[in-house]
Length: 426
Image 1 (cartoon, one colour):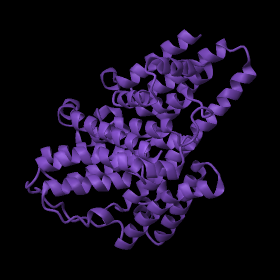
Image 2 (tube, rainbow, N blue to C red):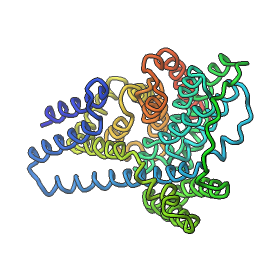
Image 3 (cartoon, rainbow, N blue to C red):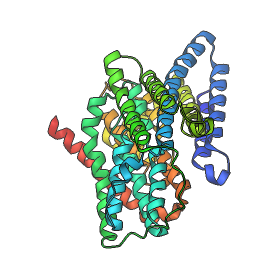
């Protein structure tokens, strides 16, 4: 049975990694893998009662993450529908490409800690397109947006799905992950940003022609209100969990209900067509459901290996081969540049028991940093990178030549800062 499970999982993983040449969506590969793995495990399992209990447990854990992501994505979409991000970009005053790069990068880093970093990457690439007409300058901006989105999401429990998984699973807590990872994540961004901004120093911004005037579907009051409400609603989720002890997904759905109700109230006097464009009902249709279903498939697939004892055996092999926890986690981060970081973290959560590695231990915090930022080394290694790749038509080889080394240096610099910081605070 074990050999069959490993073969099926490796095949599904390969299909996910080679999604582009195979022309088969990675979500389909994840779902096929999950179905086959659980089928093999069920047929080989002599205790249906035990099997069903394990599946129920895995389903609850998976559903919590899926509901959390749905709530976050819906809030972000309704803020974007109100052009809420203009609240920030309207304050841009720089006239040089270097200044614009610094501004966009730091805004992306900050927003990705609060909002889903994949969505922030899409929004900021769209913003860059409205501000810059030169294709090469836009590509450089897009590269920095990818790095900033991943780094910004790594230090927040609601920023990147992998950190969210560790937070929901109890491996990290809000206060610890924020205070201990914000500096390494910032270094991860500042190292490549310094080089890119220096290369672009003195170069003026060439803005695209002004678009034809179109009626604005929202007023300044509505934009400011929904932006502030959306940010406040998502920031309240960790507080909700701390105060009530309830799972984060419930806080996210509660926050979504508040945003939904306020949005309906402020648009109640508008016509049906005008109101439909800015409501959460419409925002829900723009959610990337394929990404959410992918997370469900891959988490259920990894859960099979956990229940079968495969992940525990892999953890013992890594410990015997590498011997050092920091090296093991660094390898996880580098692998996240090649394959999606979600299954990497899901596997780690199954490999290392919390009885040995309690909440906020070195392993979990360093795992959040490495898998969250390691995906920036190759553009295909993160959801934010793939989203930016599609939005700005970034060529894989172009990113490899221009940003892979920069992202790797930033990754290693941030890792060094975290390790040194840990030793100083010990």
